[in-house]
Amino acid sequence: MNSPEKKQVLNAGCGVAGTGRVASVFPPALWNEVRLDIEPEIQPDILGSFADMRGMVEDACFDALYSSHSIEHLYAHEVIPAFREFLRVLKPDGFALVTCPDLAAIARQLLDEGAEGIAYQSPAGPIRPIDMLYGHSQSIGAGHIAMAHNTGFTAARLGRVALASGFAEVRVIEGANFDLWALLLGPQASLEKIAPSITGPEIAGLVAATGLSTAEAGTGERRV
Image (cartoon, rainbow, N blue to C red):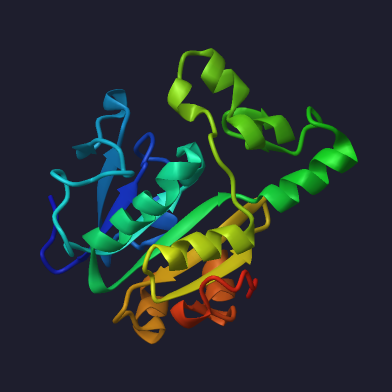
């Protein structure tokens, strides 16, 4: 049961429960997790697509939104509408924490080791550049078509689309595992208040990163 004293985080594209991803970033002592996903078999709290949460999630009702390896499943034309939905469901002082595959890092691995060279081992088995680009081949082959990747992000693109969607400031860093991490701040968000409430090795890097603000949107400048 949700505690009224805790802040609320929406896990958008949550996947299977109990993986520990959210708890490793949003300490359960401080946060209640609400799970949203398009796949009914994983029994999310809210069933539907985060590309359009109207009718499912009210305006300004979450303190934070977390999206881990979900936005790459969108089609390109859905990205900005989805990010606008992220902003809509957040309180004015809320924030979104987004992580996804890093096209630049994957491209380097592909050139060095080939499309099918093993990049790393995951709980789902070996992961190759072709899996990171197009979606986990074994999962898709098993019938989980929603696991396909339909778009991709560099640090510059991720920052640009977040700002174009209305976020006031965006901080993007390259992760250690062929991934990007981005902190998206609402119009009244305070980094000083956010930082103590989330944890993990990437958080310190995001807090220290140079932010790209709305005033700089459209310049194409990468600020990491």
